Image 1: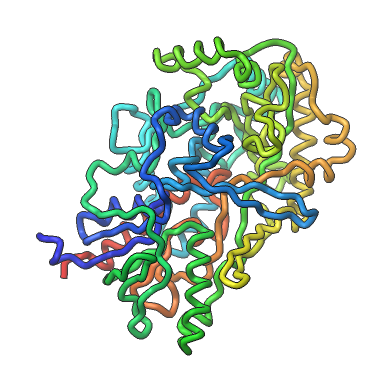
Image 2 (image 1 turned 60 degrees about the vertical axis):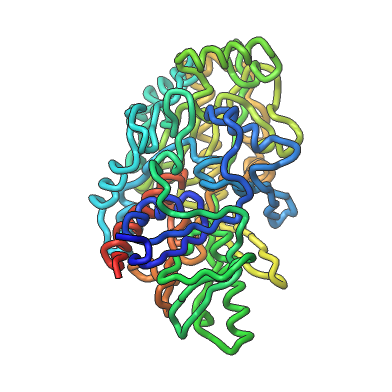
Length: 502
């Protein structure tokens, strides 16, 4: 069957969701992906998972862009967006988890899908076999003496070992990363053939409507006709385009989008660190960062096939906790193999010290704080309203107390020289939280109330939304696999409903 006999689909956004959708639809539809990013890929030296951090710390950002979210106390919170085909899956998303079955059941119910559908998508896309080149490959992180002590201490406090991929019960264990033997894997790994077309450096500026039906898009370069348009621009890109379109259409007297709300109830995970200095060297990045020979040894070990920190992001072990004892896992704490001030060198430093150290990284999985994306004369303003809910602060305070108790317990305490800012954490925890949280880079929401069970934008025909903006809650403390899986579930449903042959 030739392309001219297939219905045409335009996908707006070649990121985590967009490329999964394009890969799935290309056998049934004539697919074109429009991506605003400037680059198809970055240099291969950044492909080992640990090296991705250098992209964030470059003085001249090239493969990503940076903006600041402003907290109510006027603190700037840096937020990074991809400037590469593949989106956040390519510049982030190394740490992997499926999350909570109960949360997924709530999310899937809206789209008339079940947990079996999710697991089928999971088996289709993910693999622990590094020889499987058409899947996103998973591998457990390298463990060292700090990880062993962390897990042993948790076990002695009643937290059992378990699979960190899941979060319905309290458990601890090694972190999974999206990596093969040497290099990262991402949504690009799932694409073995490019039947679909893709264009980078092109920005969709408006939809073309015929009544309530979308029949194409206009970009900064051209107009493209289509039978269906799928919006997968991420929370910021999707909401901004829909907000701008509503303004444009209203000026024309068209109120088709006027009854819909975009950009409301967005959320982001906060990231909070407790930095710790150790009384012995154990190969932390703090030690390695200022030692040329140790860097060379680390690289040689990695490319000789030995397990090292280079196979992950620096996060190595984790624990899921129900800190408020309501029966729901609410917090994930990770061991990170370096101690850091700021985030991604945001305060001008990479690490808090050249002395050996690590940090405990805290994520409130289900934050209550909700923010907004709005327009000010076509300029998008993003405000996640971090910590606007007192409950989020209270849960983070519980997490800090748990970290102090853990770090003061044996056997992990045997390795500790100093808990940085220990007095502030214990006696002035709210200020510590407000002064030290950063973005988790996990934006969700903004269109969740305006799509139906088919992912179609309400009141329109032929216009679909599938990306992180459709989530009304978190399934896990990292959204990479959540977006990948919902994109696959959407694709399967779209194909069955709209199969592309005319």
